[in-house]
Amino acid sequence: MQNKENAVIRAILGRRSVRRYENTPVEREKIDALLECACAAPSANNFRPWHFVAVTERRALNALADAHPYGRMLAEAALAVVVCAEKERDGAADVWWEQDCGAAMENILIAAAALGLGSVWLGVHHSGSLPDKVRGLLGIPGHVQVMGIAAIGYGAEAKPAHEGLDPVLVHREHW
Ligand SMILES: Cc1cc2nc3c(=O)[nH]c(=O)nc-3n(C[C@H](O)[C@H](O)[C@H](O)COP(=O)(O)O)c2cc1C
Image (cartoon, rainbow, N blue to C red; front, side):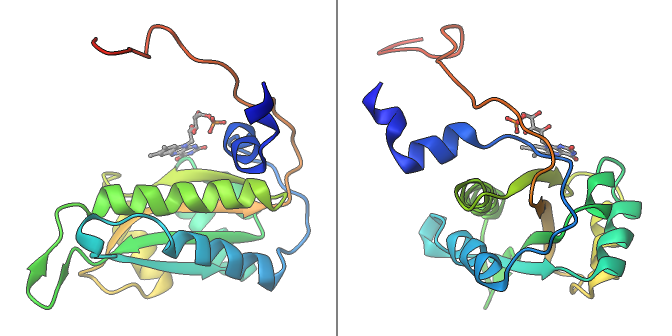
């Protein structure tokens, strides 16, 4: 299909959770591009509740790997982007912060795929004491929500791209 030659569609379908990485740093320009794409996500009422903490120091990445019950790959990753949110600002509450952060996270993962990087989304919010542990490790203020972490690096595993529609899940015109 001709659409599949489109670079954006290739990056979306080609994005897979990559949990093994080469021992190679991610260039500063690529980190900045990922963060720029994160900030370009859609946001309800344009509240833009997000904050991003980019972590490249080995000791901090190892500490995050120790803290996250399903995040061992952070000990190999060259970069983690911690996606956070202020769900209240100047007296105004934002009930959409999780969706906004999800959109920002997905932008990071797709941009990573487009730049030849492997990545995986690690959930943090709704994971017991994990948000507090991450706050403590990175100096994130107590009122800031920690939505998730993108573990990123040059991938050391290859996975096939996503392909095809699932007819059980896709409905047309009505359920
Ligand atoms: C909210 C959320 C939390 C996730 N948490 C983890 C996690 O803690 N550890 C992990 O290895 N993968 C995690 N994943 C990645 C999923 O396991 C993965 O996206 C799913 O298996 C589909 O595979 P794919 O990303 O290659 O398409 C998470 C994904 C989402 C959306």
